[in-house]
Length: 272
Ligand code: SF4
Ligand code: SF4
Image 1 (cartoon, rainbow, N blue to C red):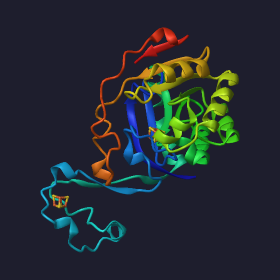
Image 2: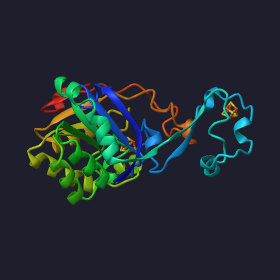
Image 3: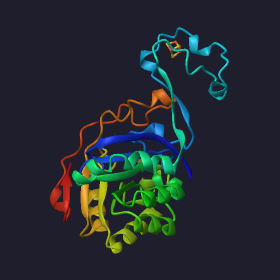
Image 4: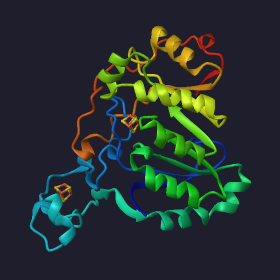
């Protein structure tokens, strides 16, 4: 089965227990204003240009004979500084699984495994399911926003050993304002996850004055209940890649220091 992937990262130590190989699937239905993977938003392969190093020599705009360059309007091979690349590539799940499984002895020895991330892996859920099934001899984790039909969410988590799910904003209006989508289905899936018996963690990105308010964190603590919660400090580098995929970072100039977090709000919360 074919899927569109924008990265396969080996030796990852931040995507679940142990050392992991993380597969990043392209495409996300959300538009979180703080997203630090803008190259994962579009479901399609796209041009990436390191604009900050560009000397504007114009060579990549000259007509070229490569078929692949036609739809991008620039030559992918002309830049003497190597500033142009494509992000996103169609790959067969059998090939991705074979690549992951090549390192299975080491991954197992470290207590790690494979993690499917994105973008939003549930946007390509059939591919995600197929990849999870093909890698069932490993510990399998998923990082998800939880934004998917509940039938899809349930099927995917039943084929996963560890689920890392975002909880960003408890208020539906705020959620829509800052991520572009309503959170009703996410809250429903959070309930399903809690009742599933699967090992899981809710992850809260701490965005200054948006998600890190006491009101929001108290409400998220209620939703999480007894589940483990990880609080992720604001990534001040989040805006770095936007220009290279032709986008503007929505939080440019936004406050970068987090408010003081009262961890006692959470039953099982930790600041990463
Ligand atoms: S060839 Fe490279 S340096 Fe020249 S304009 Fe294109 S991206 Fe910029
Ligand atoms: S859900 Fe994740 S990948 Fe999607 S926009 Fe939000 S931060 Fe980015």
